[in-house]
Length: 307
Image (tube, rainbow, N blue to C red; front, side, top):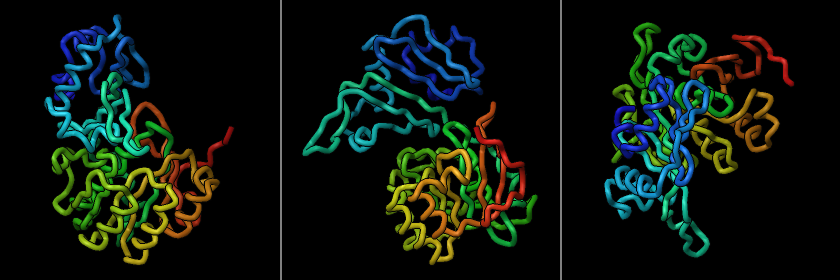
């Protein structure tokens, strides 16, 4: 968080300080030219007292790009930049097209700073459900901002570091970090803490990255965030055939919810997941509402009433 505050223009930082926020609760900081600063903290939205001016947006863009747009061509195509600390800055503005494809973004006037925090130990209490002589392939299901990535990150940390408490040795963990959110790599170096046996493919499409990781790094466990596209199905099958366990997340409210989508139903069927974890959005990330086995039987939690 400190690294983010150092990059904010002085007037924007002063506006944020007037909000008297608990820094540990800050999730997002949004900067929009011509509109007040917006900060989401503790599940509440707070606003600044004045509109952000264009010069402040330019100062911020220069800082996060280290005064070099050329060095960030690929990041600008994707619409976000990962900065020191693993924080991700989403950007929007005038899109530059070339042959119908996005070449980059110029005149950036909208920013969304997503604060990355590592909650070490978050997944520890659930390990007895997820490890039984071996790591069980696990699908983490949750709505937006329920802490899916935070939970996944800690699960990857425990698997790659091992667990004395649960008498588990470190395993080879391959992370396919398509949006630089799990490991938060900057110049290829993870900003988040993992164990000694982790390998990361940063900014790589999941389907292609999963196959690359299996063929080149022989992981015991593959980790990927927000799976669900049709092309992910082949990669999942390759992992299953290679005997590799999977830790994967998907947007959704329940197992029934994701099985109602044809592409996800195919992936779930082919992957033969051993565990399904359903998260719910409460006042902290990674709140487990339910754990099911591969057949859908509830191992923890109670069936929720759907409205």
